[in-house]
Length: 116
Image 1 (spheres, helix red, strand yellow):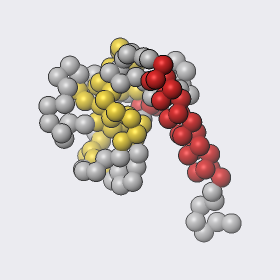
Image 2: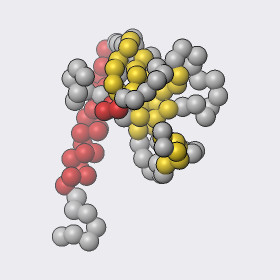
Image 3: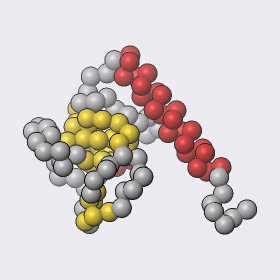
Image 4: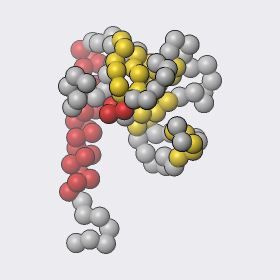
């Protein structure tokens, strides 16, 4: 995928996830699910987990609130249509990318509990 280090495609971008059968439209960034979370194998524990994207089915959109999909950039197989990109969207994308990079650096610097 082009420029793998750059996440946060514009809102409105249509993607197909790896192993996916339906296209999704990106609707939000950095979401933390508050309800039940499922993957293709069933219910999973996503407590405290932040996903890079929130999306709904395309073309029908979000029909009910339980049809929000959460995923990360590395799960995208193909960008089918890139959403509207403006200077403010690019600025937000850069800020979010910097935040992700900082979080990754902080997580790799800290030793795991019980280790010195």
